[in-house]
Image 1 (cartoon, rainbow, N blue to C red):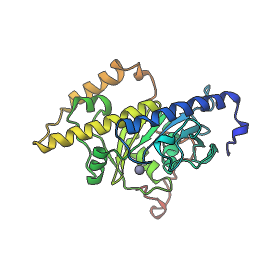
Image 2 (image 1 turned 120 degrees about the horizontal axis):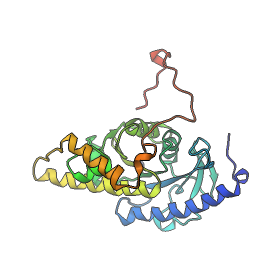
Image 3 (image 1 turned 180 degrees about the horizontal axis):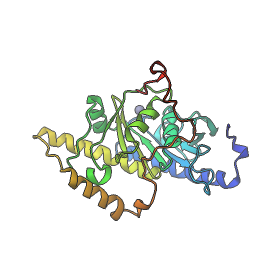
Image 4 (image 1 turned 90 degrees about the vertical axis):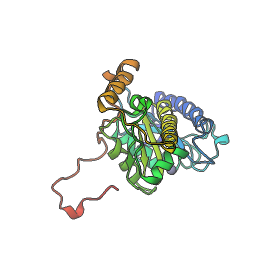
Length: 269
Ligand SMILES: [Zn+2]
Protein backbone atom coordinates (compact mmCIF):
# COMPACT_ATOMS: atom_id res chain seq x y z
CA UNK A 1 0.00 0.00 0.00
CA UNK A 2 1.35 3.40 -0.90
CA UNK A 3 1.61 5.76 2.05
CA UNK A 4 0.35 9.28 1.40
CA UNK A 5 1.34 12.18 3.62
CA UNK A 6 -2.19 13.52 4.14
CA UNK A 7 -3.44 10.13 5.36
CA UNK A 8 -0.86 9.90 8.15
CA UNK A 9 -2.05 10.61 11.69
CA UNK A 10 -0.96 13.89 13.27
CA UNK A 11 1.18 11.97 15.77
CA UNK A 12 3.22 10.41 12.96
CA UNK A 13 3.65 13.73 11.17
CA UNK A 14 4.89 15.29 14.43
CA UNK A 15 7.35 12.42 14.84
CA UNK A 16 8.52 12.94 11.24
CA UNK A 17 9.08 16.65 12.01
CA UNK A 18 11.23 15.76 15.05
CA UNK A 19 13.14 13.17 13.05
CA UNK A 20 13.87 15.66 10.25
CA UNK A 21 15.52 17.95 12.81
CA UNK A 22 17.61 15.09 14.21
CA UNK A 23 18.69 13.82 10.79
CA UNK A 24 19.54 17.33 9.52
CA UNK A 25 21.67 17.97 12.61
CA UNK A 26 23.43 14.61 12.36
CA UNK A 27 24.39 15.21 8.71
CA UNK A 28 26.59 18.05 9.99
CA UNK A 29 28.57 15.46 11.98
CA UNK A 30 29.83 13.78 8.78
CA UNK A 31 31.98 16.70 7.52
CA UNK A 32 32.85 17.60 11.13
CA UNK A 33 34.49 14.17 11.58
CA UNK A 34 35.95 14.40 8.04
CA UNK A 35 34.02 11.35 6.82
CA UNK A 36 32.69 12.89 3.56
CA UNK A 37 33.57 15.17 0.64
CA UNK A 38 31.24 17.23 -1.55
CA UNK A 39 27.70 15.71 -1.42
CA UNK A 40 28.72 12.11 -0.67
CA UNK A 41 27.43 10.34 2.42
CA UNK A 42 24.04 10.13 4.08
CA UNK A 43 22.28 9.56 7.39
CA UNK A 44 18.76 8.20 7.82
CA UNK A 45 16.47 7.37 10.71
CA UNK A 46 13.38 5.17 10.92
CA UNK A 47 10.00 6.62 11.93
CA UNK A 48 7.88 3.88 13.54
CA UNK A 49 4.34 4.49 12.29
CA UNK A 50 2.59 2.27 14.87
CA UNK A 51 4.46 2.47 18.21
CA UNK A 52 2.08 -0.05 19.84
CA UNK A 53 3.03 -2.71 17.30
CA UNK A 54 6.67 -1.63 16.94
CA UNK A 55 8.80 -1.49 13.79
CA UNK A 56 7.02 -2.79 10.69
CA UNK A 57 6.78 -2.67 6.91
CA UNK A 58 4.62 0.50 6.95
CA UNK A 59 7.36 2.54 8.67
CA UNK A 60 8.91 5.62 7.10
CA UNK A 61 12.47 6.89 6.92
CA UNK A 62 13.96 10.38 6.84
CA UNK A 63 17.07 10.98 4.72
CA UNK A 64 18.82 13.80 2.91
CA UNK A 65 17.88 14.75 -0.64
CA UNK A 66 20.09 13.81 -3.57
CA UNK A 67 22.96 16.05 -4.68
CA UNK A 68 22.64 18.76 -2.02
CA UNK A 69 25.75 20.19 -0.37
CA UNK A 70 26.19 19.94 3.40
CA UNK A 71 25.72 23.72 3.78
CA UNK A 72 22.20 23.41 2.36
CA UNK A 73 21.05 20.54 4.56
CA UNK A 74 18.35 22.26 6.56
CA UNK A 75 15.56 20.53 8.47
CA UNK A 76 13.12 21.51 5.70
CA UNK A 77 15.35 19.95 3.02
CA UNK A 78 15.12 16.45 4.57
CA UNK A 79 12.85 14.07 2.66
CA UNK A 80 10.56 11.26 3.83
CA UNK A 81 10.15 7.93 2.04
CA UNK A 82 8.43 4.62 2.71
CA UNK A 83 10.39 1.37 3.07
CA UNK A 84 10.40 0.81 -0.68
CA UNK A 85 12.25 4.12 -1.05
CA UNK A 86 9.25 5.92 -2.62
CA UNK A 87 8.96 9.63 -1.75
CA UNK A 88 6.19 10.36 0.78
CA UNK A 89 7.01 13.96 1.69
CA UNK A 90 9.59 16.54 0.65
CA UNK A 91 10.47 18.93 -2.14
CA UNK A 92 13.38 17.06 -3.69
CA UNK A 93 14.27 13.55 -4.77
CA UNK A 94 15.75 11.37 -2.02
CA UNK A 95 19.43 10.41 -1.85
CA UNK A 96 20.42 7.85 -4.47
CA UNK A 97 21.32 5.50 -1.59
CA UNK A 98 17.76 5.53 -0.21
CA UNK A 99 16.90 2.07 -1.59
CA UNK A 100 19.78 0.56 0.39
CA UNK A 101 18.71 2.28 3.63
CA UNK A 102 15.05 1.27 3.06
CA UNK A 103 15.99 -2.38 2.46
CA UNK A 104 17.90 -2.49 5.75
CA UNK A 105 14.94 -1.06 7.73
CA UNK A 106 12.54 -3.47 6.01
CA UNK A 107 14.62 -6.50 6.95
CA UNK A 108 16.28 -5.55 10.28
CA UNK A 109 13.54 -4.42 12.69
CA UNK A 110 15.90 -3.40 15.52
CA UNK A 111 17.78 -0.98 13.24
CA UNK A 112 16.63 2.61 13.71
CA UNK A 113 19.47 4.42 11.93
CA UNK A 114 21.71 3.85 8.90
CA UNK A 115 24.78 5.82 7.77
CA UNK A 116 26.84 5.61 4.60
CA UNK A 117 30.11 7.38 3.89
CA UNK A 118 33.20 6.97 1.71
CA UNK A 119 35.51 7.78 4.63
CA UNK A 120 39.10 7.43 3.47
CA UNK A 121 40.65 4.65 5.54
CA UNK A 122 37.57 2.43 5.75
CA UNK A 123 37.13 2.80 1.98
CA UNK A 124 40.79 1.93 1.40
CA UNK A 125 40.19 -1.45 3.12
CA UNK A 126 37.05 -1.84 0.95
CA UNK A 127 39.19 -1.18 -2.15
CA UNK A 128 41.37 -4.16 -1.19
CA UNK A 129 38.30 -6.18 -0.14
CA UNK A 130 40.14 -6.90 3.10
CA UNK A 131 38.26 -7.13 6.43
CA UNK A 132 39.77 -4.98 9.19
CA UNK A 133 41.15 -7.53 11.69
CA UNK A 134 40.15 -7.25 15.33
CA UNK A 135 43.43 -6.11 16.87
CA UNK A 136 42.16 -3.27 19.10
CA UNK A 137 40.09 -3.50 22.27
CA UNK A 138 37.86 -0.68 20.99
CA UNK A 139 37.05 -2.85 17.95
CA UNK A 140 36.11 -5.74 20.23
CA UNK A 141 33.94 -3.34 22.27
CA UNK A 142 32.16 -1.69 19.37
CA UNK A 143 32.08 -4.35 16.66
CA UNK A 144 32.72 -7.63 18.50
CA UNK A 145 35.25 -8.82 15.92
CA UNK A 146 36.60 -7.88 12.48
CA UNK A 147 34.83 -5.38 10.21
CA UNK A 148 33.53 -7.60 7.38
CA UNK A 149 33.59 -7.00 3.64
CA UNK A 150 30.24 -7.05 1.80
CA UNK A 151 29.69 -8.09 -1.82
CA UNK A 152 30.36 -5.85 -4.81
CA UNK A 153 26.99 -4.29 -5.63
CA UNK A 154 25.87 -1.51 -7.94
CA UNK A 155 23.55 1.31 -6.95
CA UNK A 156 20.05 1.42 -8.42
CA UNK A 157 18.16 -1.57 -6.98
CA UNK A 158 18.12 -3.76 -3.84
CA UNK A 159 21.65 -5.13 -4.40
CA UNK A 160 23.44 -2.92 -1.87
CA UNK A 161 20.72 -3.41 0.76
CA UNK A 162 20.79 -7.19 0.25
CA UNK A 163 24.58 -7.14 0.60
CA UNK A 164 24.42 -5.17 3.88
CA UNK A 165 21.74 -7.42 5.40
CA UNK A 166 23.36 -10.68 4.27
CA UNK A 167 26.75 -9.60 5.65
CA UNK A 168 25.64 -8.12 8.98
CA UNK A 169 22.57 -10.29 9.68
CA UNK A 170 22.88 -12.35 12.85
CA UNK A 171 26.43 -11.14 13.51
CA UNK A 172 27.97 -8.59 15.87
CA UNK A 173 29.46 -5.97 13.57
CA UNK A 174 27.50 -2.75 13.10
CA UNK A 175 29.63 -1.84 10.09
CA UNK A 176 30.18 -3.46 6.70
CA UNK A 177 32.70 -2.38 4.07
CA UNK A 178 30.93 -2.87 0.75
CA UNK A 179 33.53 -4.13 -1.74
CA UNK A 180 35.24 -1.35 -3.73
CA UNK A 181 32.71 1.12 -2.32
CA UNK A 182 32.83 2.00 1.37
CA UNK A 183 31.25 1.63 4.81
CA UNK A 184 27.58 1.33 5.76
CA UNK A 185 26.80 1.34 9.49
CA UNK A 186 23.66 0.55 11.49
CA UNK A 187 22.46 1.63 14.93
CA UNK A 188 19.51 1.77 17.32
CA UNK A 189 18.95 5.28 15.96
CA UNK A 190 20.72 7.63 13.56
CA UNK A 191 23.07 9.00 16.23
CA UNK A 192 24.17 5.45 17.12
CA UNK A 193 24.84 4.72 13.41
CA UNK A 194 26.84 7.98 13.08
CA UNK A 195 28.93 6.89 16.07
CA UNK A 196 29.61 3.56 14.33
CA UNK A 197 30.63 5.44 11.15
CA UNK A 198 33.10 7.55 13.15
CA UNK A 199 34.43 4.45 14.96
CA UNK A 200 34.86 2.33 11.83
CA UNK A 201 36.95 5.07 10.22
CA UNK A 202 39.02 5.45 13.40
CA UNK A 203 39.83 1.75 13.70
CA UNK A 204 40.49 1.41 9.94
CA UNK A 205 42.97 4.29 10.22
CA UNK A 206 44.68 2.99 13.34
CA UNK A 207 45.07 -0.58 12.05
CA UNK A 208 46.35 0.77 8.73
CA UNK A 209 49.00 2.83 10.54
CA UNK A 210 49.94 -0.13 12.75
CA UNK A 211 50.52 -2.22 9.63
CA UNK A 212 53.05 0.32 8.32
CA UNK A 213 55.38 -0.46 11.21
CA UNK A 214 55.02 -4.24 11.42
CA UNK A 215 52.58 -7.06 11.96
CA UNK A 216 49.51 -6.56 14.11
CA UNK A 217 48.76 -9.08 16.88
CA UNK A 218 45.27 -10.60 16.98
CA UNK A 219 43.26 -10.57 20.22
CA UNK A 220 42.20 -14.03 21.50
CA UNK A 221 38.58 -14.83 20.65
CA UNK A 222 37.76 -15.37 24.36
CA UNK A 223 39.03 -11.88 25.15
CA UNK A 224 37.08 -10.37 22.22
CA UNK A 225 33.94 -12.10 23.53
CA UNK A 226 34.53 -10.80 27.07
CA UNK A 227 35.17 -7.23 25.88
CA UNK A 228 32.10 -7.23 23.63
CA UNK A 229 29.78 -8.69 26.28
CA UNK A 230 30.93 -6.21 28.90
CA UNK A 231 30.66 -3.18 26.60
CA UNK A 232 27.34 -4.09 25.00
CA UNK A 233 25.46 -5.50 27.97
CA UNK A 234 27.06 -4.15 31.13
CA UNK A 235 28.61 -0.82 30.17
CA UNK A 236 25.65 0.03 27.88
CA UNK A 237 22.08 0.88 28.77
CA UNK A 238 20.65 -2.59 29.31
CA UNK A 239 20.98 -3.51 25.64
CA UNK A 240 20.88 -7.21 26.49
CA UNK A 241 17.15 -7.04 27.13
CA UNK A 242 16.42 -5.79 23.62
CA UNK A 243 16.22 -7.48 20.24
CA UNK A 244 19.78 -7.88 18.91
CA UNK A 245 20.52 -5.11 16.43
CA UNK A 246 21.40 -7.48 13.60
CA UNK A 247 18.27 -9.66 13.85
CA UNK A 248 16.88 -10.21 10.35
CA UNK A 249 13.18 -10.60 9.55
CA UNK A 250 11.36 -10.15 6.31
CA UNK A 251 8.06 -8.43 7.02
CA UNK A 252 7.61 -7.16 3.49
CA UNK A 253 8.29 -10.22 1.40
CA UNK A 254 7.26 -13.88 1.43
CA UNK A 255 9.89 -16.43 2.44
CA UNK A 256 12.03 -17.57 -0.51
CA UNK A 257 10.79 -20.76 -2.17
CA UNK A 258 13.61 -23.18 -1.39
CA UNK A 259 12.14 -25.77 -3.75
CA UNK A 260 12.82 -23.54 -6.77
CA UNK A 261 15.18 -25.02 -9.36
CA UNK A 262 18.74 -23.73 -9.20
CA UNK A 263 18.53 -21.67 -12.35
CA UNK A 264 15.86 -19.42 -10.82
CA UNK A 265 17.88 -18.59 -7.68
CA UNK A 266 19.24 -15.09 -7.98
CA UNK A 267 22.72 -14.46 -6.66
CA UNK A 268 22.45 -11.37 -4.46
CA UNK A 269 26.05 -10.34 -5.15
ZN1 LIG B 1 28.49 5.33 -1.76
